[in-house]
View 1 (cartoon, rainbow, N blue to C red):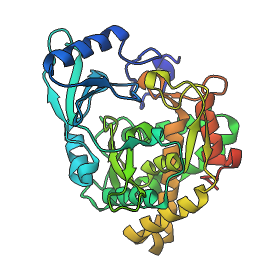
View 2: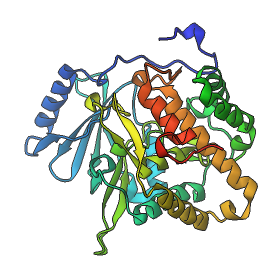
View 3: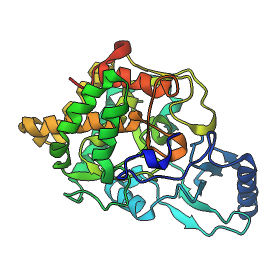
Length: 351
């Protein structure tokens, strides 16, 4: 692990959490006791899959109780604004008072959203699901949002240039030309509208279910875990679209870490067709994408920036300040190969 003195000063250090789930088994057991005492008449179960930065319980059929350490709280203002933009796709969240046995935890109560997580479906999505996803991104575009960089306390948006510089210097050589082109385009990317962007759009945070209109087509029913959300240039959040176009295969999913250790990512055979469906719908909702080639190109570059940021930095318990390296972060490296360079039959994200 790098010492703070070797990291660029512009990237704020974050608390280190050892590998494994961020809450110890003892703490999780205390959380379960707390839940049973607070809700003695509810049927209480652990949800699956669990996230790395939280411990989540299902209360009966309609509610969720989530415990998070102080280092990974939910910004309730951001969560409320996300709900204002995206409506029922975002759960309402209530902060509960922490009892004395759990003084260092934040406890949240929220409704249970319908459906299954994308991680549990294990099948290619239907075109209707990609249409729903495009409308989700279009809502962020159409919402009132800052047109300049966010306050410096948001760690990704306030450190785009030093992060890209670090990626350009330290990624394996085959990725550095992509980082260099993105760095050269950063001014154009930062000139895009800044929109509320989900910071952890992974399969376990994406809820889907069958359509209610009787055709059986899956639809998007919820986006969970807004703890890492912040304002970023339009297009950066499109890194998450790749998760709909393929799946994580193999590996050990214990501890809630994503990607799972030892896993690989592969695109579905229908990925190109699904990508075309997504972009056609997004262009219909954001006509400037089709009308202005320069604008579209900047959004595409922002998408590549998102892929670099989300797979180019190791999670390391939430630090996000160490560039991935081969032999230590092979799961992320493999995703960069597939998503950026088209390795393993993927579609190159950068030309």
